[in-house]
Each structure stands twice: as C-alpha cells, then as structure tokens.
Length: 593
Image (cartoon, rainbow, N blue to C red; front, side):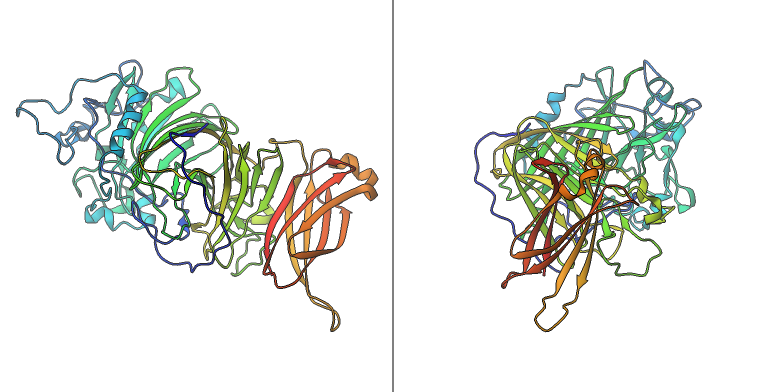
C-alpha cells in the first residue's frame, strides 16, 4: 500500500498533448521528453557517486565463509592478483574524513545489516543538497560504441554466490559508453555488509582492445542475477538492474523486452522529466534451498530520495515484490509509481511507415487495467504522430500492465529480437492506493531502438517538500494476461478508412475488433442474441455487425465511426454481453478525426 505523511493538493486534469520529438533526457535535471533507448545492452544510464559503505568489509567473488562465492573452477583471490590490488580497497568518497593514521587498514570491521538503515540513509540524503551523479569516464570507456560496450563480458566463472547451492548467480556490469555513473554494490552475507571493490579481473574485454590497465579504478554500472529457469542445469537471466532506476525480470522461456522503473518524476510534463537513479545496492546472498533473492536499493534524484526492497522469485512467470519509502526534497507535480517501459513501432492496427519485412514490431501491444470497480479495460497501443497522454481515473486500482498478447511468430518473423517471446508485465498494488489515475504515455518514435511507451500510477495527492510516501506492489513477468481473469480477451484491432459514396455521404472509419477465449464459445450457439455494447463520444456509431470467426476463434465485431459537429476527437468503448452478462473486457481507444 502507499500513504502520504500529510495531505497535498490534487492533480490537474490531463489532456491530449502534441510536441515535437526532439531533445534528450537528462539525469537529475529537467529536459524535454523523448523516446527512451530500448537496447537490451544500452538502456539509458544514470547512477550516483557511490556512498562509502558504513564500516563494511570488502568482498571478492571467492570470499564467502559458508559457501563458495563463485561457480566451480572460479579463481581464488590469490589466483587473481587484480582482485587483491591496492586499488580494490574501499576508498572514502570526496569530502570524507581521511584515515587517522597511514597504518589504518582500508578494510574495516564488518557490521550487521539492518534494512532500516537503507530507509534512514534515504531520509538523511533527502536533507542534503542534491549532487550531480555524473562523472567523466576515462576516454577509453567514454568513447565506446554501444556495440563495443556490449562486448565487455563479466567472467561467468567469477560469479558471486554458488549456483550449485542456491541456484542464483550474480554478475556485474562494467562502466562505459553512456553508463558514466558508478553504482556501489554491497553483499549481505550472514547478516553482514561486504562492499564489492572494483576489479578489472572480473571482466573479459574481448575485441574492444581494452584491458584493466587502460583506465583507473571505476565503480560498477549495475548487476544481473542468473537462475536455472529453463532447466536444472541452465543459467538464465532472471533480473537485471542497469541504468537510472531501470530493471527487468524474466520468466521461463522469455527473452528481454520491456523494462520497469523504480520511479518517474514529471514524465511528459511541461517542465521536463527528472530521472531518478539507483545509486547503491545491497544484495542478500541466498542460502541453500531458498527460492527468493532480496535486493535493497538507495534511490536519489533532484527532488526525491528513496529506499527500495525487491524480493525476486524465479519461475515460469517470475515475480518481484517491491516496497518503497520515498522522501521529498521539494514538491513534485506528477509522481509516477510502478512505471513500466515498452516499445511499440507498429502493429496490425497501425499502417507501417517504413519498408520492413516484419508484419509487426512491438514489445507490448496493449495496456490492460483492472480498476477499482473490477472492470477490465484493454487499450491497444499506438505510435502516434504527436505525444499522446491518456489518463484512466480510478480509486484503489487492482492492477495494470503492458502486455504482449500476440504470440504468433509469423506475425513478427523476427528471429533475432523474438517479440513473440518477450514478457508482459502485470502490476498488482498491495493495500489501498486511493484516488488517482493510470497514465499511459505514447511517444512518437521512428525506430524500434526507442522505448516510447510508459505506463504508471499517478496518485491524486501531489507530494510536497518534507513529506514521505510509502507504497508496495508486485510485478509478474506474464505472457498475454489470459491467466488474470475469466473474461473474453480483446485481441486484434484493425482500422480502415471508408470513403463517402455520394455528395451527401460522410466519410467514416471502420473498426474491426476480435474477441476470443473463456466462455465466449459457449454463447456462439445463440449468436443472434450476442450483443456488442459500443459507445463513442462526439461521434455516431453505425453498421454494427458481429461475426463468428471460424479461423481465429471467438467473434469479430465491426462498426463504423462518423464524427459529429466540430469535435476533433472521440473516446471509444466496446464490450460483449449476453442479456445482462458481460462476456468480455472493455476495449477502449481514443480517436482523432
């Protein structure tokens, strides 16, 4: 659940906005909105100068008292001189007190870890002025292209934790390219904090031409957790935290697609987006037989700090329970909770703008919402000509998510990206989230390399300076969402222009919708009494037809939309019913004439 420490004012009504696709995202500063890079290895990066771990001992990949920290065959510190170099000691941050004597060791006495310490760190950080997290990387790293950066590999034999004992393994990401902010990594072993010092020996620099001698000691850019999802002998990506507050989770037989974020601040707002970052992580070493791994994170931004906890559970549909406490340095106009990032270039309802052998290109094809009244809404995604913001007013939402419903490989024909295997993310709030709205932001994008779709919850009350906000939710890496409810799904949306016939006739837009699944097949025996409940604001609905779809299953609903008066847009809704029984989700879509 979430709460404010004190009440604040309400959010203003959102409307359709149009802006040029221009500018760059800035970290810890305001700037115009643009489509976010969605490359699996080049997510937009940000972080923070790592804070000095409080009397935490340093950890090497092979340093563990109760279980091997690395996989079988991993080198020990003695085998890897880079791991024991003087540069690997924990150094004080700029401005920190110097050691009292030259003989004082860099590695201090380990201390017990308490999750409350992360919350207290965030609370105290909010009382301090914000410091820009960026620092200048050595030229050899800063000038790396995205392709060359992707060639820097963490040595799997150096992985932290013992995959043989717990199933989990921890890899680290090297700084470079756009990842120019060091992130502090700490391990929690037997309840004690161990800081992980930088070591070039953990990485294979491959064809980049670099080596550990080409640059001075750096922090890390992020980390990845692996787990045998596909089979007991496997080692698959389970979760990745890399860049700003981005993270992703994967289930069995899923490939990287959309991402989640810790938080959004004024995204698509008139003042420009402020992007918070995870500046430090604490990862709890799992014990034998444990099926959950816990990660704590410290978030920082110009106006907000936060303490996060992630409890990650691998499985067919891997899940992560998220809890957060935020502290506000200053007022925020629009805070976005549980944000999801995805990409939509074109699909069956959007005519292709570019020559492409693929029929569809998207990581998600719709937004599904289960609102506080237990209504299920399906909103197809779009790659609009202008920035488009849609708000779904609600109170105590039950869930929302960006889903990839189309699982037919033939519709994509992409053997590299495998859009048909990318997961959808479903967010389930814990407790009452009160009044607010689910916001969907669709950003014009000319390329699949941009994450141009964002969905998140915006509470009605705006946080003021000095307030606190706590909230909890769960994210599941699901497939098409068919396991979420017992209603027929709205699957396909197709649109065509109907030219007028005769001088007095009006032009119309024809919509062709497909509904399938659950109990719908049972009612097809009485198709004449199956009805499509269709409504449209500022427009007229004509020529409604319902047809049995013998090829795809379910039914096809067809109707024509004709604008009335001087209205420039319309909001459409459609669902199936038999007598008073609702059989399907409510399909909804904005339309600009």
